[in-house]
Length: 447
Image 1 (tube, rainbow, N blue to C red):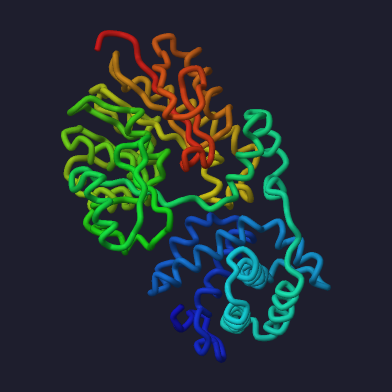
Image 2: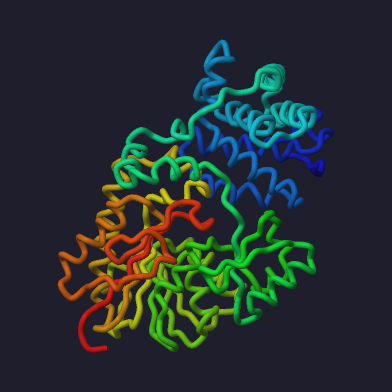
């Protein structure tokens, strides 16, 4: 790792390589563990502060490992510290968790992990606690950590819900959700076919495996920085999980169709649809105006920006945006609990509450009912989530069908996962993909 100066540089902190990376990891973990912030959002701010891609990869690895093993590390802190850490010690707690992750989950050389993490305490203005950090990490090095059950990381209410919804698969879901996710690529077929791009990867010394479930998908057995992917900056390839790529297959709009992506940010699914068919008339909406820039950046990099319209609006507020012209196909990749992507967002287990599910189910129903109105007779609405909870998925679709007699489920094939009365559910890590739900809803009437 490179030796870089820390934004919180203290005495001696610039003399040890990797100090800034550890200090940033402590700050990220403090925000997630102590302030309820999103890991994804915190990393988006922290990662650009590191110039070296190896440092950025290490920062991510430390944070993910610390959160996946959070329960074990918190037990160790409770046992090893004579006095519990207080509310003002969130950054110190984050630093100790980062140190544990380096020694335990990541198996970094102890001398490097110890020296850089102790120096990071000084860089964070914790000069007086540097000795404590050193002592606790050396104890961790000597004694190691207790083995933990994967279920210990889960809140009890969510554990019970998963076991109720998926009694035969629950233990695999729980175990797989705490494992690192593979890196999936989506090849932009406007620039390369998959086989040609795989050859470019091979020439760059990067191994890749094709996946039959999606015509554009490649899995990398060994993750690499996106900047090292041939043509990434020019939009030749994007990072997108297999399950998310299959949304385009499940919607399958006709050539040149008028398509709505109702909750489009960050834009990957819309871009995939346009990469497959540049003649689509696509409108991408998102309720968060700040996220529209992400959509535009995605569209610009992949070269589909001129073929789509982007608007910041609540998709359920039809009076605010709909011109009355019906759509041939609607994609509702709905806001959800994210329980199918815990391996990519381990802080879901920390932040999610039962009341969140009630609110999300109500929002999903509101969106479904509103967007059904903009779909032409004979058109298709694809309802998808990255949830594994029945209330958000099969239960949500069942309720929608009761409210709308002109709706029916058009069955999807087994390539999309477990059958759910014609809809499909993939569970985390099945075929290497994230947990994902797909329901293809057909509107009766003349096409």
